[in-house]
Image (tube, rainbow, N blue to C red; front, side, top):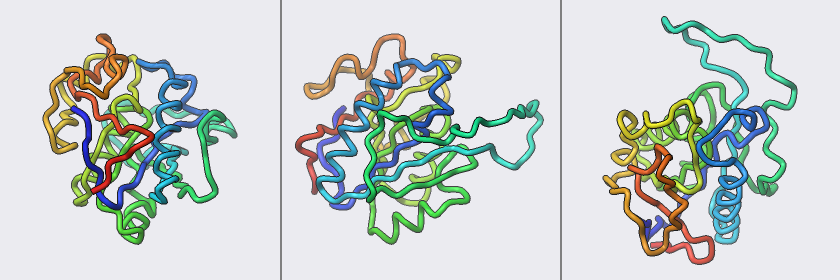
Length: 209
């Protein structure tokens, strides 16, 4: 199910494409995700639309009954991946929760820019991407999830299609079928992303309302 129209003021949000995440196994290679994100960010910048780069630098301060994991973060943990395209105009955010809104200026920045729609990309689908997308939807933003520009951790394999329900967050229930403008590799059979369908934003012709 391709996206045919973007709002006149949409923003691209890139989640956790950073060195500290690069060592974790993912369903699809991070280099492939970065390539797709770079195509999108280039298209957004050409159209003077906001690009937000988000990195994680710690965990949530709250306590749950699950065992806490404490580890020393390397100095370059929050550094962006070297093959991720960046621009001085990009808005940078450092988060310490799963989603990118809590404890940051993300909502204020989007409101200031007049943004009505967000395109959420990056890793991991069942963690930072999902949390950010759900929060954005609850705040009243229209949400797009381009599945060829995100991936999940291998340890979560198969869980997303049963539990996450991201199609409702995006406003559409998508079937795992190929679209005429979607690459087949956008939903490999082994990936838990398949039930989300394919939300593909062509890098050289973003349709704007």
